[in-house]
Image (cartoon, rainbow, N blue to C red; front, side, top):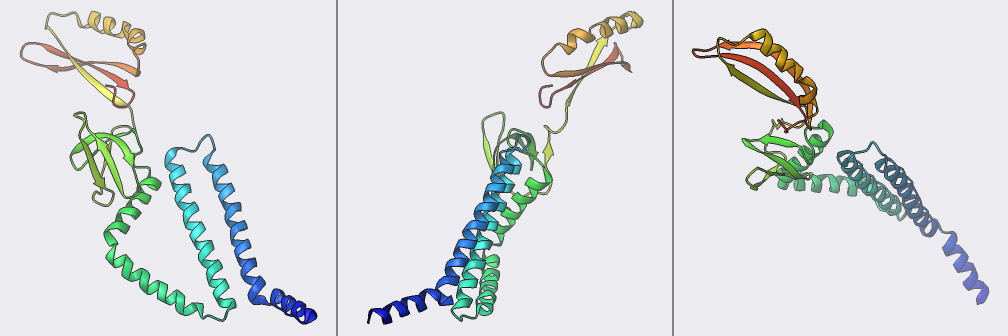
Length: 234
């Protein structure tokens, strides 16, 4: 009797329906952990910003589900289940769910495109649909913007096509100096240019330009000066 039991145990263990599913599961875990470690190493790099980390996190989840689905389908095929019918059913179900949740999917895909297109990130000052403020939260479904009054607007990522980003380039402060017609222009020009070093010492100032006479008005001469500043500090 004991020999018969031992034989049955050996037959059970050596049966492909027993060990192949285990192999599939172990392979899925090993492959996922290898990819996960690689992505974690990449995301911890010094040159990786929060935006790229979000993309890596999203990619990691997609890879995880793909690996697990492949493992499950492989296990089912071992037990003689026709996986092609399941795949077709999943495709039909996915189509139905996609139609029902098309707005949500549209927001999600728009969020991914914003990430890849580098339209803005947290901390940027933007204007979307006439609402201007600082991006305080960015998700794959929506963006939260806070204006100067403290009002927070939540905008669906698929609800807009254009965005003005005030933080992608330096700001220009344009100054028209009103001076009388009897002003010595050469002396004025020299005095303003001599201020260059002092102006550049001001925090956030990058460049100082004295451009000269801009306009002759009825009562004065308008002398133009521009100062290039760090974004949103003008």
